[in-house]
Image 1 (cartoon, rainbow, N blue to C red):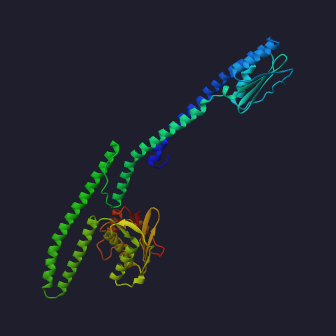
Image 2 (cartoon, rainbow, N blue to C red; image 1 turned 90 degrees about the vertical axis):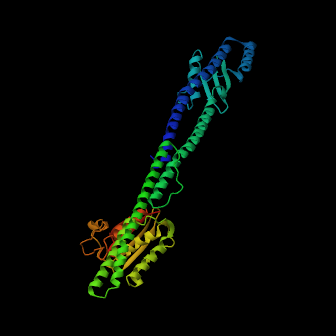
Length: 433
């Protein structure tokens, strides 16, 4: 079966029509048409038998007059060749239904043991039958023994089927289109893109599914909005006392204890910002068309500069341009987390942008110690620290990879960890096109 709903429905509609036409054609051509042809052949055979009887029972001028009258009445020429003879017919398989029917019916209806011959042409059928003193020849028009309705039957059957198929396709397309729009709207929402103009329409079941999608979208957006508002309040409430504490410490005399407290407050602010970014997930940002090649270059330069390294430590391989609807601030943060982790544990980092028909891949490779295959999924757990030599969250809050994956998944994609050709870790952001 085809994969698409439209073509599956099309096959379901077309198959019964084709099967019906095959059955009707078989019944018509193999049964009804052959029966009709035999009936018409019997009429011609009866004419031949009657004319042979006239030739055998009359003589002289009366015989010729009757032959001429029969020719005018029957509508085809009837001639007689005196003294001629026919050879006995050979037993051979006749090619057409008309020839077989004429051979069989004439042989049954002509009295006595007489030789006869039937030769079919394009327009006439030459029938010759032996009389007692010669050969009677009849040039019968082919239309007298040919059913003319099959052509009309085929034209009407094919024409009506095509018209019905066209109407069915039109209605089927109108029925499938709402489902296609629902699928596109769901896919766009899953990629974090706005779907402002989607409205339920179509059949009742499709409307119910579309309305369920809209209800689900409203609940998710309301949940994200409420969470963002709540976290904004928490951020304000917690940062206010921290600011007061920083102000009070600034007014105190310098001492080792004061410096330690300032470090603790800075760490609390950093951790608070990390927690809020993870919970908020950049949910309020709108998607816009962005050149991912430029975005990757900017993120790589910013990371290398922030860590005090030379630009040569981070190389970027990106075709220009690679356009995609993304949330630029969120995706830049996702890239920054991955590049910073790579720079912490490797000397050389390479960032690659690749695109195919289905995905855009942002690949971050490093030459660090890497992560064992069995621990890679564990690295994405929030607040989790790895115990191995490479600890991706050393010096942080344990949320770097968790935030990055949350952002990638909000775009409908994901982050995949693998072994890098440079010897360290490869982190691939895979975004659907």
